[in-house]
Length: 225
Image 1 (cartoon, rainbow, N blue to C red):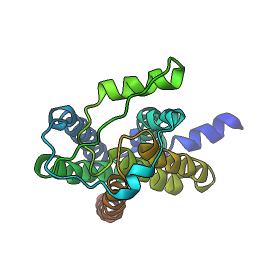
Image 2: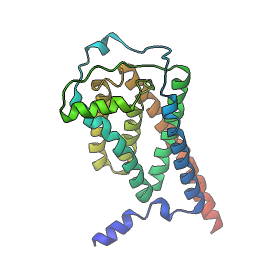
Image 3: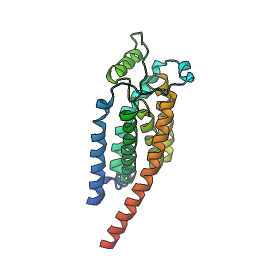
Image 4: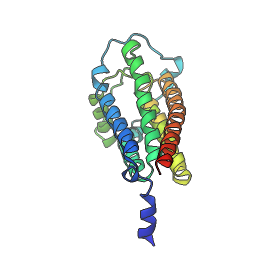
């Protein structure tokens, strides 16, 4: 019974689709990887403006929130892999949304770069060491819009599409990731809001583009029969 249920689970994966859809999905994965390759070269100064507000000065450093912050680095790829093998349509939508988000973000990083200064992090506990590791491996630029926020929105939206029951829990964790960007002092409030707006638009556009593609692919498949 369990084996049969697992078989149904994987039936909608990209591995069971026609070559056209597989090719498009593969191209989107390649495009996303290629775009990520530009992140570090763009993560340089100088900053051209600052979206900092007076409220940002009152946000304390909560180093324990580095845990949800870094969890996004694992949750994103794991979610995409699951979508690819179990729900190719959700995977394609998340890929298109991710590509659009990066294109939007990179336009800001190229033409309107920003910077968020990091505080000193004393202590030798695991949270302090992990936060210093984050600071040491990520320059303090590429802040507006927040990609951690943007990808959290994309993950939440597509997990809710994939499975509403589990998606609620994932969405709640994604909300914590978004909040953590402020409390580990990686972003300002405006960065988070910009990431939310950019990702919301990307998800909206991706849903329409992928729905149209799948409808056309379904029609073409039906006409060939």
